[in-house]
Length: 506
Image (cartoon, rainbow, N blue to C red; front, top):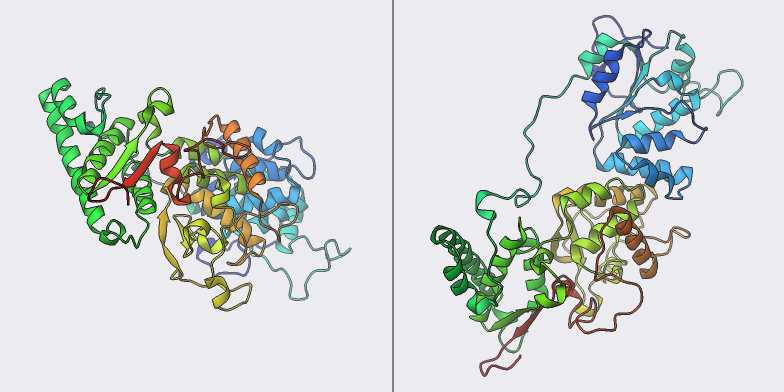
């Protein structure tokens, strides 16, 4: 077993094909180690606490629990052991985990320790094994060095002729504290600029009137200083909407050469109503947008009565940071990612079940949609056949698309985990993002994804009222509008009509 030279810094050694494993000697089983690991624990430093009573295949559940997954949900996922290890690797890769620390690592068998070392290699992390026992750790160190190979009996194959292929260093607690120090306290910034309401976002109860009378009603019912603040937000929002319309002159004049409905749907979802800090702020923005659009010959209607009590609460995005925290406790990456897309887009799975891996940004921040007619906007695009036919083609650009849909930054890790899982399966860029678990060569069906999303939503305690089994039979339901790109507006009972010079529709 390789020992660290006195005075040498193990982290300054040259890079090796396999990540270095550090065997930390803690023969006295000091209680300060447990406190130290509790302070170190984060998404970048995962602390695995092996259960002393477990079977040979239970270590993966301890790893998933250390990665923040719900133990009860992990056990009820009906995953195979291999799928669970793949999910653990995907989640750790998406979280950019740098260190995997095993508390009381003497409880592990040699096979389990080697499996953790292989996981660390996969996610590009450093493995720290805390040996809290007076027993000699030489056999464990030799097994880690040789990646589980045996010199005598060929366990997992004979030792390679060039010797140990994994760098291993035995260090003491003092070196562990020095090499893996506690991070300085950092200021927690909101991942979404509108996540934490400011002092101007705490609005009083607003009048329940339509947009032509909204500003006048606010003047009568609100205090003067409150109305001045509201009027400033209202005017600023109207100017933003006016600029939005001026950027699309051809989508409103006859003959219409663009999809104004889809553009407005994306504008409300991604920029104005979706990221609003509070429902009342979203209501002020909506009334201003309605008034500004009407001056441009566009009638944006909102039917709040069909949304039940507190309809303004339905205007912002339903994919909140709290929902994403609950989704990150889900073990299957496809269930969490499909739920993220469905909640953010307010769309049924038929609109994204055919997405390819290349349609998701590497870090999960953007969704790229191919250039296709409205009725097939989410299907595989012609550009997939126009370039190199190699399955492992990794085209770095997204010039084949018509822009990108920004996704909430607090949901990026979930989508990146699903992409990492599919890449580990050899998907490349051309294969589907969601596949049939029984036959990965086939895309996941819409019914399967619907059931998957509904089960996930039920587990985290939310109910998407617009997602249901069977075919939509009522007007205004998801998927029955004039364009499949307006599902977000349809779910909030928003409809848009472009008027001509005589007051009719275009």
